[in-house]
Figure 1 (cartoon, helix red, strand yellow):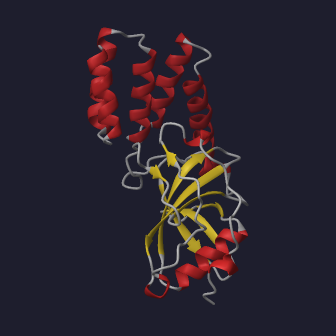
Figure 2 (tube, rainbow, N blue to C red):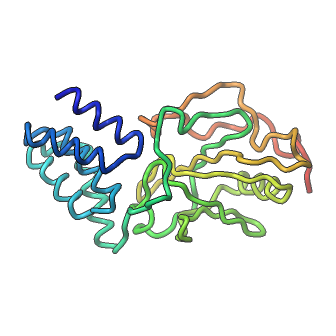
Figure 3 (cartoon, rainbow, N blue to C red):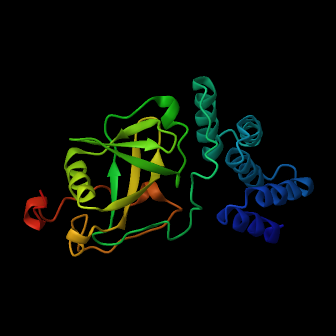
Amino acid sequence: MNELAQRAIQAALKGDWDEAKDINESILKIATDDKDALCRLARTYQELGKNSKALSTYKKVLSLDSYNSIALKAVDRLEKMAHNGSSNNHSGHTFTPSASSFLEEPGKTKTATLIHLGATGVLTGLTIGQSVQLATHPHRVGVETLSGEFIGRLPDDLAHRILTFSRAGNEYETCIKSATSQLVKVFIREAKRGPSVSDIPSFPVSEKPDYVAFTSPDLIHEERPRVNTFEEETSLE
């Protein structure tokens, strides 16, 4: 049984949700009340866009353990999504989470808490690791799903940095680090550096090295105070 569980977990980590589903179903044929397998199976249904099956499976977990925190949160989220007519089927819009998914690189990565959040239906449809996009405007930077749904805005100081470096040719990749209906954090990584700023980091360099594991993104460092100001680092405009 343990071997099957490990195979199911590995399949999920590789993003092979069909394989993960099949393995978890095999486990449940042997142990119909295996709560861990049921939770894993429900997650595979979510990733495959089968939210109704995911919801019923999570509810089965709650029938076995009414205090199961994973199932409680998932049921709440899925019911809100159903009420708002939203879907979490982001096929092709996510990367497979791994231990290195949120690896901090000094000067090249930044975790940001969004402000002015969008509609609840959009927020409850977000998943950890989901790729999103930065939408630049003259004086602000929004964060949107790849289909253009508004999620929120970057704080003004960070937006100013992104705008300045983007105008100089920098490009950025962004993904969801954590999300609820009231709080969304994104992880921004510098993907390309413009020629005129090739020796200037996108973000203030922290002296503290960070290694962020996917397994507990909400427990990791909050926004850190800036070591120096943007004007002290560079003046690009």
